Image 1 (tube, rainbow, N blue to C red):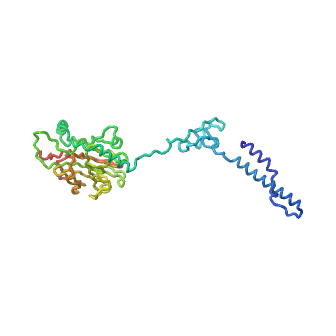
Image 2 (image 1 turned 135 degrees about the vertical axis):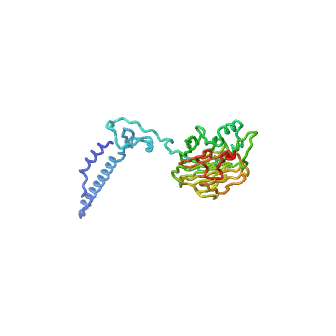
Image 3 (image 1 turned 45 degrees about the vertical axis):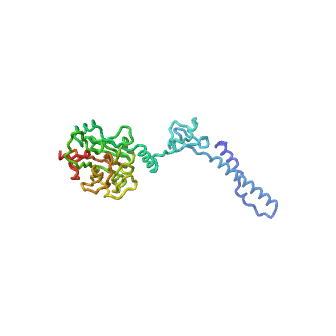
Length: 356
């Protein structure tokens, strides 16, 4: 029954309804009492019928707007996904209620919000599997690579690199001829150098310096959220999972900015030095290959040995979780000397250029 017919029937029965009939006259005559009761029942039925017709007129008269079409809710036979529908308050002047409409598409799993990131436990499990499946390759550069390093002038050959289409290539940007690193997303990521800490020597070389101190420094240029962004400097072997900061997994060490802790295959960390979250701070990472000691510096001040007697083919590594910009210093620029004076003249190649 449509809306017009319902209203017509309601108006037709309305005159027969008498509110006075709801009260039974207290007439002493029993016939009058019977008549009043009959009128009461008739009035009550009329009222109930009127309410029913009102309900029939109003129920299911809701609409949803799909594109340029208005569809009564009661006419929709398939579930409506209001999350994915384009619901508009305005209807085009060309639309009409009499216009033919197509039912909306059924609800699908596509509209369920996807799981964006794996859990911490899943990340840890993936990292441990990676290190288990990919043990460190403790191989030094080839003689050809050593020749290239020497031709470039030692420390100038070291730079942070990222392979195209890799995980880190989507998170890390290398600019300014490799001197500046930008972390672009709030995701754990690290970046390693092309060469490890080592002394590039060939047969016949006469080393004047036997200390073999390997060192580099970084300076925070920008840190958009210093209390939540964690920056890490350290050493890792290759290969190392790109989605982990140095120190969190096997075959790595790291010094983290947000809490000043040192890490070596440890996700909790050990108290070591001050935090270093502010822009302008300079942190250094050194390695003495003669005794396996790793140390860090802050603004040129030695922070004590962080780890001792750990020997690997170490690659300088920085990592971050959060948006930040880092400047790199390998000690190959006389106009930008290391803040840590004891490392001046050294670099990632371990030889003291001041004695050559």
